[in-house]
Image (cartoon, rainbow, N blue to C red; front, side, top):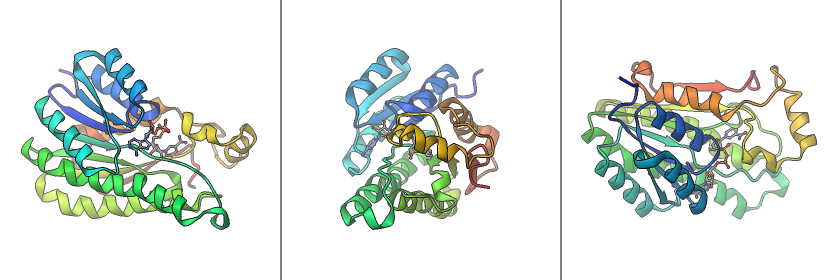
Length: 243
Ligand SMILES: NC(=O)c1ccc[n+]([C@@H]2O[C@H](COP(=O)([O-])OP(=O)(O)OC[C@H]3O[C@@H](n4cnc5c(N)ncnc54)[C@H](O)[C@@H]3O)[C@@H](O)[C@H]2O)c1
């Protein structure tokens, strides 16, 4: 029996990057996945590739009704056992170049989106006999992040929200943990120039980017019963970048 047989997992921002790799691995291990994203073409393509065990919906994580739609779809597929709050934006600017609009945009997608996701998922998870929520933060939520104050603020917030939600949701049989990736080779990091990425990697003890597969393996561990006694934990996966 595969690790995720009979389980349904919802992934926000699941059309590409780390979320898409998690979806592929989950389906390969027996799960059904519900994917949300603002990128419709990519999301539809991925769902078609994954077959009947995957459904894609256009979802903006800042919209409460979109969350309700995805949670209903999950329950129609057999319940809701896992949620990966993975959607995020990264528009790096230093403090003096960050205006209120940019700051609030990060807060809405990265932070409010995660809050709405946990709130929407919890009752369905409880009805399904419990579940696991994984919030994708960053090393930017563990230390000061150069030139990305708005992003960093939201990733620190996710770390605290994870611990508060872990306390609130433990009586409902729901675990909540945060994952803190360092530089990972997806589209998001390539908003930086090659020179900026090289400069960043010089600060990483392992001197390389991580892959989406490496992060996905950790996320699947946290979604699975292998981590049954873990909640409120923060796990760095960063080649030592946060040391
Ligand atoms: N790549 C890295 O170096 C890195 C490092 C640390 C943390 N992270 C985090 O990992 C997560 C996944 O990022 P990724 O590396 O796969 O990059 P990515 O840009 O490929 O994935 C992010 C996804 O979120 C989606 N998204 C953005 N706004 C949305 C919204 N309002 N509603 C729904 N979906 C939305 C995007 O369309 C995209 O598909 C993010 O939370 C990111 O902050 C990434």
